[in-house]
Image 1: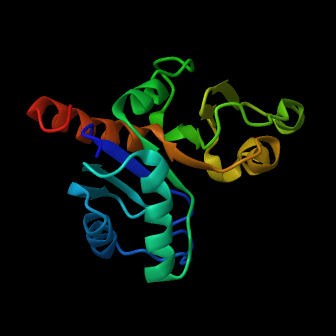
Image 2: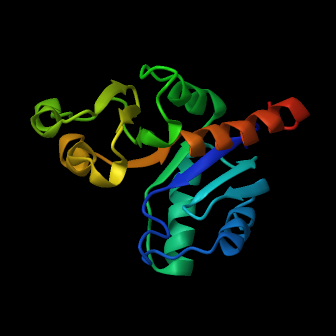
Length: 184
């Protein structure tokens, strides 16, 4: 069992009516895997919790339980508070809107990255690649960004994105658990 509170981020949950995962059953599923103090945040497959096995065992267990119960197997990303705080430490300046900055969490430390593909479609976007994280600033919005559209082909491997408002909220939930002294 690991004591530090963690966050789980699922890829592609409750998007455009696909991969529906109601949050109450998601919390129950996580509790059924032995996780404690489970709390979900918004409807896109985010939760914080305490306890449970190491990430290497827990990620596949969550994925398998969702597949068994809901018929799809999303990518699962487990992160601790320092990972979320690293995403909040962005280079885009204090005036940048956190809703327009996305933390793209990566499964691998050094995935293949075709930066030229992004440069070819870039308008006003900017990015920085770090281990297991790409920070993407889309001043015009994620939905209209050609860079965001090209990102899955430019950055190989499993990934999931959250805007920094969501990342900050998850970090706050993890910080409050740390202050309570319940999880390291």
